[in-house]
Length: 180
Image 1 (cartoon, one colour):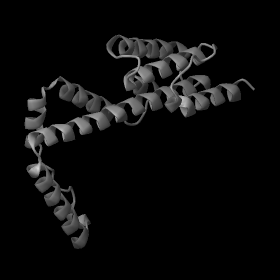
Image 2 (cartoon, rainbow, N blue to C red):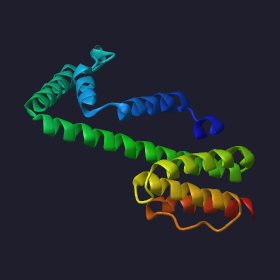
Image 3 (cartoon, helix red, strand yellow):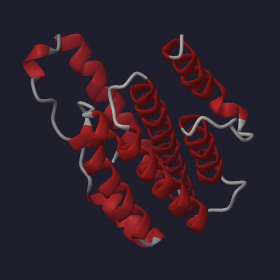
C-alpha cells in the first residue's frame, strides 16, 4: 500500500514477493521441502555475457551447493529452509519500515497527502498487533509504525525499538526542516 501511495518503482515486484511469502507461510514443512526440491536453478539469461572462467566458477559453486543440500539430513534441510524464511521475513519487515519512513517524509514534504497515509499506517499496525506478539520482530515494526503515526499527527513519538531509531530520526529531521 505504501509503495502504491508513494509510486515506488518496485511496487509490482513487492506485491509478487509478498504473495510468494504468503504462499510459503501457508505451506506445511513437507510441502515447503517438496517445493524447494522442484525449484531448479534457472539458466543464466545471457550465458555468453560471462567470461568462461566466471561461468565455470559459477557452475562449480552451483554443483557444490547442490551436493551440500543432497548431503543434508531432513532436519538440516528443514533448518536451512527455516533460516531462508527468517531471512525473507526480516527483509519484508525492513522493507515495510523503509517504506513507512519514506512515505512519512513524503507527507512532511507535501508530496503525499497525510489523510491517505495515516489510515494505511493505522490499518497495517492494527493488523500486525492483532496477529503478532509485541516482543516479535513484527511487533517491533508495529511499535515503529505507531511512532510514525504519532509524529505525523504532531504528537511526541511513543517509545520505539532502537532498531528504528535512524528511521525515526530521519522523519523528525524532515519534520523540523519543513517547519522552518
